[in-house]
Length: 260
Image (cartoon, helix red, strand yellow):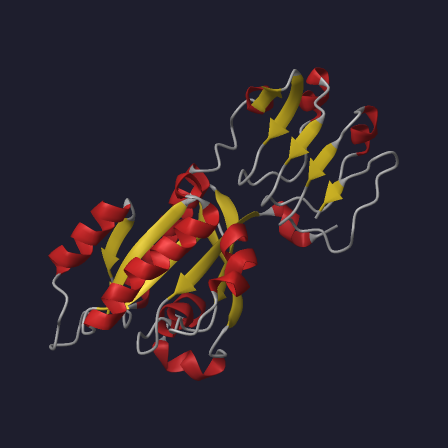
């Protein structure tokens, strides 16, 4: 059994350009101190278990390399598509970093589609510095324009940083609609039924869906680690289970056209 399947899992991607101390957010989340920064790699994926909405939730925090003029966002498609939330960081002391988050947002929106952005936080850091170039109002205005959440965070205070991550996770969980009746997610396509449930933190494909005998099941970016055997009762033409938690390619008798 994959132990991660017993938790909600929120995948968060952290983006900025060079010169923005975004790694301070990582170390505050993990160690409650920026002095532990040397214990984390400059980039990587980190995990932190927190308690949100009466359940343990595992944060899977991706800290990719800083964005530069040479960054090919095509190399980041998998990360962008599998993330439940994005934190776009800029320094309030750097106009270039503020302008960059606007561009980063647009690139993510282009890859995911504007209607499927999930949760995005625009976060200004370095707020304790005296040489501010970006007023609070500028950040708030850009966030309103892009339809994102907005915060200014003092990255030297662990309680503030942890409260930010807690809020990101809360909103990401709210987008899952995990309490929705599974049958309400079944649509008709060309006279056949399809079950579409991306980004809903599913740990299994609900058995109720077989009542409609769907021909297509799309459950991308969930928390599936196994496939239920009752799927063999369906005459599927498509089963899309990409961006889940499978450690190996799943094998279910009678199923074909599996996308992982």
